[in-house]
Length: 229
Image (cartoon, rainbow, N blue to C red):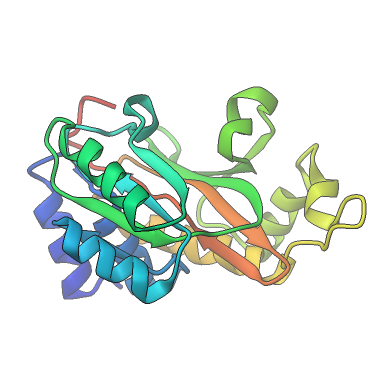
């Protein structure tokens, strides 16, 4: 069930047609989906204080309702190692159109996966799971299932990838937390069903998964009124 805070996030986002990443992550956190420690810094002082609090390196992303695809404008910088670098990144982001601040967050690690959902006019919500990060367009390794997912569906999605050995531990690497990944897919599916009438799509890319669990390192929620995606 949506809380008042979650409804407020969606209501505020209607003016832009999509939910800005800091608010999308706050909505995920309210639902119980794991996200990195982050802050939405409106000025450099706030960004520096948070980075020093959680420790470097950090990641920084531009927050702008005019920038849906941040990578297209070099609006994402990972592995920022110190104060001066963060100041330079913040200054560059400030020049981007529609600048409303910078998302500063802790670095996440693990296998890069993608989890997404689209509300199909004919079939309703459909869940996508696959290899994520920059490998999405190269490997095109993903599976689809109708929502809501059952535990059996989630298990079939995990075993349905061509790159399944990466999940199970490849060349000495630890396997990902399969139980945690299954739980993430089921919780995500429940969120999508709850938001079905209020969204057109959700993308989490990457979802970092390791032996210690899974964490949504990116988040984009598109609303029905948005026509620019």
